[in-house]
Length: 269
Length: 269
Image (tube, one colour):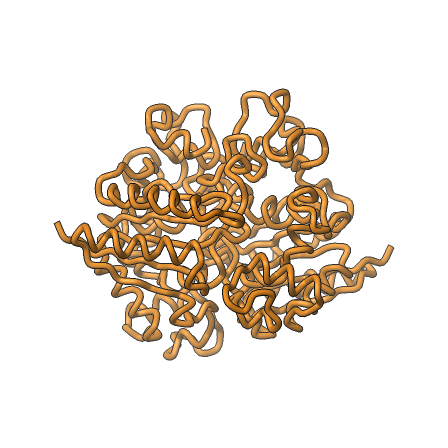
């Protein structure tokens, strides 16, 4: 069945590994019969900094609260045109793919600024004006899928379960769990190309093949089994119930069935 | 003894909690006899996006590689003036404090872009042109201290050891370990004000007092005991030795003596 896929990407160099993998995405998804939309952050000179210029009509002209003004702008359709446009693309998408080079274990600033600005109060948080009721598995993006595709400069063993950088999927937890699962996306395990800094032509070819395979499973592969806030594991909406993830704490306590899930190894266990 | 302290901060509203805590920092540190420098990212309209404009003289005009051009610019003193100026402030500092609101479990884009642009190849990575030899406890910023001070919208129990967001110090690991410890900073446990979204005047007063206390220990408190790459725990420079952190994997395996360190609770164990 035909789906809509949005690709959000961040690299200014057309011949970069990131761009080459974006081209693979567009081509492979279109071949699958899907409609592909792109948000080329560098190409469109995306405004990265969330600031007062994003609130043309203020709820409080005297004191800038981002939460207040974001909610005021979103609910009253008073947002900047570029923010509203990205939200429309998101809401029309069945899946969103983020492609970027890993810079200091996170997104390049231009992409972080896309999140900061587009993830409005009333949409990505404070959904339905119900505080924290709809989050982590519920929210405006429920039913949609998301996946990260990252170009990593360093070698894979630095990111192995006992590698010095920490496991990649744990370093990305603020994005996969905190940014994407929070407003309701089902998040697939991250696709990573390691050693991107000194990659050979053969390495690029292999990375493209592996990425094509992952794209075939975009609508079929099992997402990371993050625990739903409203699924019973967090009776008060904040803390895990005693009988859940017994003896565990920290990031991985929020991933269910780690013993049996195929993602266990990738999450760094 | 008089020290130099650099405060890097990111909030455009002068009456914000972040700004109020920055004022406390400046005042308290000056009263201690220290020299305080500030980098007010919104105030100076910091350029957040790392792009080709940052490389006025290119090593390769045809293809933009950030690593190559960053190294070329840094080593040849061909950097943008704003980047070079921030690096001078960093190199003159004995301690660096980062003050920001937590947005989607990380830095606002304007601060991430400060890291992306200022953390040059040859300085913050690739130090002494020796690949990955000097990192995680060694590097250009060895002997300096760093600390995060964050304003967190949500309640503290969401960040408790079994709280739904994950423990704050684990969410910040890509910054504390991956961004600050990597080039050599000793990183103090994070100072956090929770519930910043709806904070009362009494809450602000208490947060200021607590922050003043933390500032008193800026040069005395024990840093997070991250394991040094060149301290023997990583014989190949990449993966923990078998006899170290036996049975552990993931982010916390890179913190030594978690059983006895006072930071253990704060790290979410």
